[in-house]
Amino acid sequence: MFLYLLTILLVLNAFTQDAVLAQECRDRIPQNVCEQMKKNGKCDDPRMSTITELQCPKTCGKC
Image (cartoon, rainbow, N blue to C red; front, top):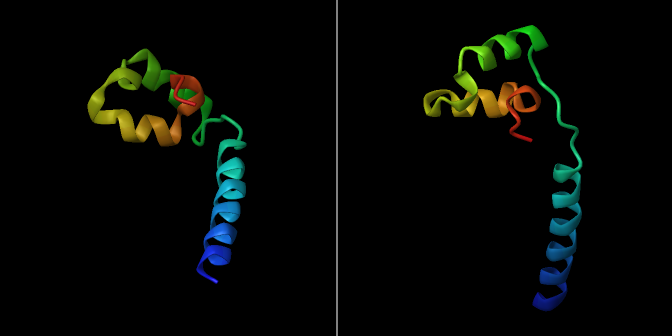
């Protein structure tokens, strides 16, 4: 019984991972804002890495 449950969970996990990887690479805020952040060096700033990865992944090359 445990083996069946484990197998089902592994299969579901495999399909879930494919859906996450298939997301398109796009900026979530206006492109001009992302371009300004990139111009000001915010894409490479470690303090801004979380924001740039979530909000401007396409412009900052973090897809």
